[in-house]
Length: 438
Ligand code: GDP
Ligand code: MN
Image (cartoon, rainbow, N blue to C red):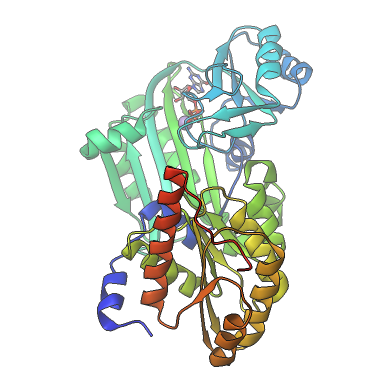
């Protein structure tokens, strides 16, 4: 059991908001071109354009747009494409071009390569298609987003008159330039609210009516599709006095996807982590994080608590991993395989609650997996619940270096200590033998 004082400290949300969001919410994100298709269906004004998967297709699309003012946009599920670069050195995932031949040229350089942006990490994400659009002349760029606010249990509209590619900088340096407004959880947005927002943003008088209309329609998209995010950056006022949604990043609540099969079909697994996909196929809920302590836990709540307590003891979890209720040997084998793939791992913390499953059965599974893998990583196991004593005995008699603990606090603190030892040994290039079996 957790002691009261630990529990109190745990409830302070030790994990960063980014990590919390990653493990607590899973959202389907779709490409800009598909987001635009949805907006078009709702009568929202977006640039004319179409997607292409080869250079020749891009040239054709550009040709059919019948204008020499064009933009070519890498379809990669990440923000910051404009300022990103490809692994080939090519600058910019969004390029202004003036000719269908240029569309082909850039498409050939983008497709099949990885785009690195400030949101993708160093590995970047693969670009398998480009979106070729007519280029509109922007007079003013706004940021506009509707998000689901988990804390307040209602949508929140976040908007700024200083939209464009540097919205993160605006948020950091000049937060007062970003307005936030909670809106009632209703199927439609009150026109009064839309009007107030448009006034507050300082939209030009000639564009006000269309801006109100656009915002109202975007809210309808948000509601109808069970979206968790409808983000338009930039929402632009063009020189011909139209309000255009130039970029669109839509995300949908995974728990509502059963009623949106059409959206589910737009999922692009090439943009996701292959290990996370493999894990989900095996019924494991696995999310990679930046730390060094591998976690293998059953139950999402226990997994969160495990990560928290690792942080509390100064460690960093390498992953969130919920092996599910059954936690059978097969699941444990898959889970270990995923954890040890990460070269940063310095310890593995197995924290299993034996409720329906028996701890001794899990211990057997653990032993069979561990003894078949040649690991030089300390394993800390806390198996609590049904048959826990038998489990400890099985582990003690296995001749393997699995360190058993009853208390969560002690187990976590040992995991962190072992992890530091391994880290220091690696840094000093000294061999510490955790090799299994003894
Ligand atoms: P992001 O960098 O991933 O957010 O990609 P965006 O689609 O927002 O494109 C980056 C920037 O390129 C935008 O903020 C605009 O300033 C510019 N941009 C995108 N589409 C157009 C367009 O049709 N016309 C003009 N003039 N600029 C555009
Ligand atoms: Mn954008």
